[in-house]
Image 1 (cartoon, helix red, strand yellow):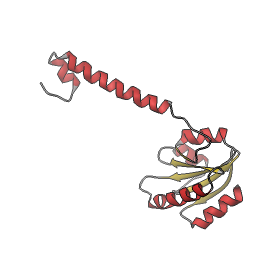
Image 2 (cartoon, rainbow, N blue to C red):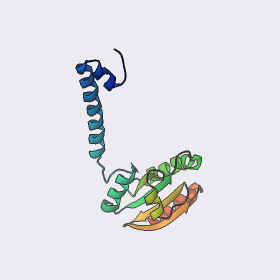
Image 3 (cartoon, rainbow, N blue to C red):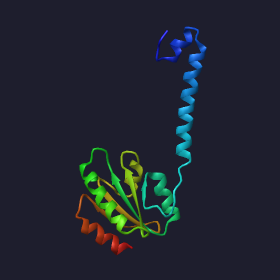
Length: 149
């Protein structure tokens, strides 16, 4: 009997195949959890993604932390991304760039007064130093970074 449902296979009396599916499922789920739990960061990194990285940086870094709040299907967010990456590369060792998806972290966005994407928030020593909402020129981001370094 061929079926993609383990319960159907089990009812046919073929316990070896059912066992195989359960083992395969637990193997993939277990490895996925291990990967997430073993996530490590380095203070030497420039680019980060997600709330875990942001929280870690807020506790560990004395450097400027630039957080780009993005949203799915946001063309302006995609336009801004390479601009911020280029600026971050030019300032390697002076700052960290973190990308946070507002749809995955709505409470964090609300806590920092972020109402639209893209919004860039600048932190230093666990304090908000500046915020830029919307897509602006590269020079505006560069000037803001230089004034907050």
